[in-house]
Length: 78
Image 1: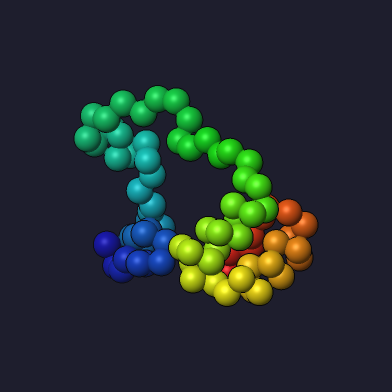
Image 2: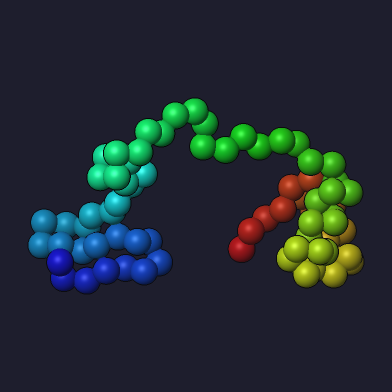
């Protein structure tokens, strides 16, 4: 291994870049992976506003501007 990229969790080797996938982890640790990884439920705009203000510590004004710009209960992550 020549180097490891922390941002992508990949390794640069002489043959090329290698990345460890969930399937690799399951094979190595003999963990069964069944079902969906995550199911998303639709949120109401008020719930999104609460989450932005309480969990991400965004001001109510910024939260309202973000939900208006994204046209509903969506948020851009940057």
